[in-house]
Image (cartoon, rainbow, N blue to C red; front, side):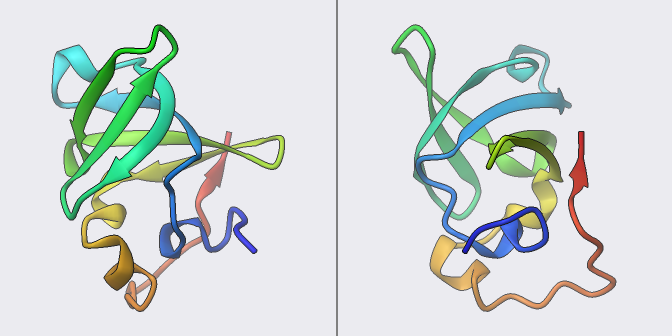
Length: 98
């Protein structure tokens, strides 16, 4: 079951997300639902129905999960979704709950 401790290892398609910080000015505060994922990007459907492709490693994301907001550095999410499940992250600390 997906929770704040294991979110970086799970399937993220279908989760609601907001971009908290980004090195790309236009990405900040984009909100929506993840509808597709590649090794380096998320495809997010915004609340107005428009879709935008976001580069993972330049953002800090807030995922809405089980009534909690979980902050995750996008660099931890880089990788094919099927490979991320098996990924080992050295010095992994639980994602921060906002």
